[in-house]
Length: 253
Image (cartoon, rainbow, N blue to C red; front, side):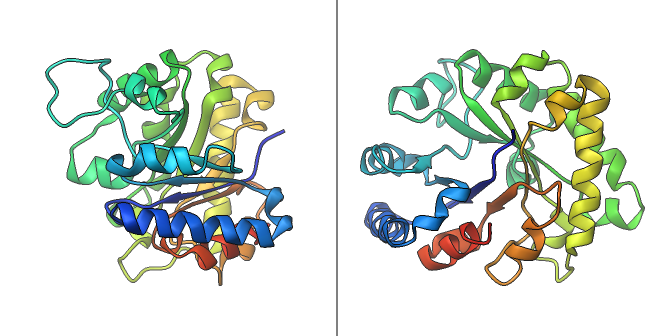
């Protein structure tokens, strides 16, 4: 049975002091809201604060995950972090393929395929991101774009590997553009994604993979979005930087 998941991507925000404060606020929210057990919680602080966050939340229900990783285990890759390094500090889940990594750092399907393989070889769980831009949506090419991103990076895997995959659909056209994705549009794409996985791996795999929505989820719209049958949670950006807002989204389940 697939899990409901709410993952907070902190991006390049919060120094060490702010990280400690936000974690303390989140822990307080969790302790006072026993009904949050309906969704698995994750947070992705910056690399410099991962170790401290991991220590602080070692006994917590909140999992600390990484925002990115390199495909090599070690070597001359200045500024990069390997899967083994993440595992050594207690981090065993990583976000790969985020739209900002694709856009600003030129990560393509071939690079992401290598990263996926490296993460799985190190027994890590992957939150794999994908999604179309505004021009893709306007040209009605959005389904083809999403299909290509998933197939190129993930469809070489054996069915067993999908136990370690969480999918995260990001409608890039609806993030910071003034455009708005409706819950119906989210469900339409999520259903397409689940059917796509089923066409390759069968319904047993597709019905057990969690598909998160990453299109500006907020406390005001979370319940409506999460009520869709193929939406299993959210990859949260800005709202994850506020403990009360993040927990309100978690509680939308």
